Each structure stands twice: as C-alpha cells, then as structure tokens.
Image (cartoon, rainbow, N blue to C red):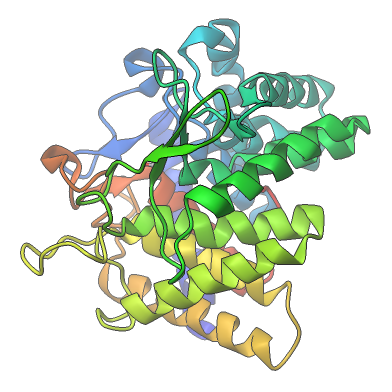
Length: 369
Ligand code: GLY
C-alpha cells in the first residue's frame, strides 16, 4: 500500500520535529498549530497524558530511532507525580500507564516501568465495586457511575493478571465488561456513554448524556471505545460474547460513517446542523475494526480489514496535516459535543490512534492494549 508507506515516512519526519520542539512537555490540544500548554502544569493526572508516550513507543518500534524512546521516557517519569498524588486519578489509569509504562516494559523490559504499570493496575482494581460489579469511573459523589470509555482501561487489568498470575485482575475486568454489556450497550449496537447504577446492587438508575448530544443519542467516540474495547476484552479473555458485541458495535459504526464519507460526526444522532466532525473517534474505531479483523477468519476478516482501511484512507485524504513545522497530525477532533472551545481541533489521542492505525496497515504496530 503505497499511500500508507508515504504517510508513515512523512509522519516520522513530523513526529521527529515535534519531539525536538516538545522536550519534556506533555501535549494535549494544539492551538493555532502549536502545543502551547504543558499538561505537566495544567493537570498531570489528566486522562490523555499517556497518548504522547504511546505514539512515540509505536514510532520507536517502527523506526528504531532513539529520539522517540528518550521523549517517551521523560513522559513516563513525569507521570510518577500523578501516581504519588493518586487522589487526582480516575479510572483512566489504563490509558495513562498502558500507553507509557506497559508499552515501555514491552519494548525494553525496564523493571521500573513494570512496577509503574502494576501500581496503576492496582489502583484500577481498587475502584471495583463487588456488589454492583463495575469499576467506578469518576471520584467525589459519583459512586455509581460507569462509562463506556473504561472498556479500554480493562487491558491494563488483563495485562496485570498475565504478569502476576493473579486472576483477580482479569475477573474484575470480565465482571466490568459483563456489566457494561448489560447497561451501556443497546440492542441496535449503539451505546450509552454513561450508566448510573445503584452502588449497593447494580440496578440501572439512569443513562445521562455525557460527552454526546443528549441522553439516548449516540456519541461516536463512545461508540469507538465500544468497538475497540469489546474486541480487546475478547482477545484478552477468550469470551466469544465480547466479540459478538464488538462486531455489533462495529456494524453500527460502519453504517453511520457510510453516510458521511467514512469520517464520523461527533454524535450520530445529533441535529444535522451544525456539522461537527470527530476524527479521533474515526481513528480509534478504525483501529478497533483492524483489531477485529485480526480476531476472525476469512471471509469475515475481509469486511473489517476493508472498512478499517477505508476509514483511515478517508482521514488521510481530508483531515491530515503532515507539515513538520506545525503540531498535531489529525485535524477536526472534538472532545465533547457541547464544549465549543474543544471542537474541530487537533487532539493528542486522535494522533495516537491514527498512527497506530497506519502502523497496523503495515503490520508494524506494537500491541499496547
Ligand atoms: N472521556 C474520555 C473521552 O473523552 O473519550
């Protein structure tokens, strides 16, 4: 695939330039083509703080260039402050330490990186509610809240179970996935972002809107978390029910992006105007589709591989900025439907998933999740 190889070459050039500019900074959203804020100062515990390191570990694996490894290591070390002040952390520790420490450990065998990832897994397991059988998402009074995003965090628990031989980690992950299947997934393959449960018994109380348009609508990044997250839960547990759910979520995603040139709107059930893209959801779902393609046999395999590639191609054609002087790769990402200031912007997790997707098409990715 010529177009993919060309993109990787330019991506490498651009990310090397970004590494040179960033030094020890941790990026999140680029403003006017530049990462101005440093998340170490803004909020070290912010859920996206591992994506920069994860993207650099992917590129280190693909190119062998030391600059990627060095900068990824800076981020991982900086995140020690967040582990120490753990009260600022929510359930996103999977995103944060799978992409930084566990990715490092997988590449280098660094024992300090393994310790960090196990520490994060222990914090995640500590958020489990055994009566209601879910991992709570957020802190303060949100004792019964779980969200679809957490499907991606479960990989940290499966990893910890393999690393330590302690099945408690994987059992918690499976119990959470079962509850997510019950309260977050809908019959038609779409999903809720949030479910509020009675923390005493797991009874479903409410499904508020979250980052999508409204309750009952269909936030596309949440849908992408469902596609990729349930596929990963199947790969990590072998439970075929999770693969069925991932496929149903994938079919719903494909049907919806099929109406908009294979790039997702922020919410599939929002009013037609204004048109708001979320390329981060698109890139994440593409990785999920390629993950599913690797988990099924032909002739099914071809379907998921085809749409994974089509979607990445559409992003590359219409939403990419490979100019080395500017920060941020994927344009038109949106953090949340109603957060105007973070709409149609370059967001670090969009860049991460686009990079992972491109490397997947070339079979040069590392398995981080
Ligand atoms: N709540 C994490 C996300 O924006 O997807």
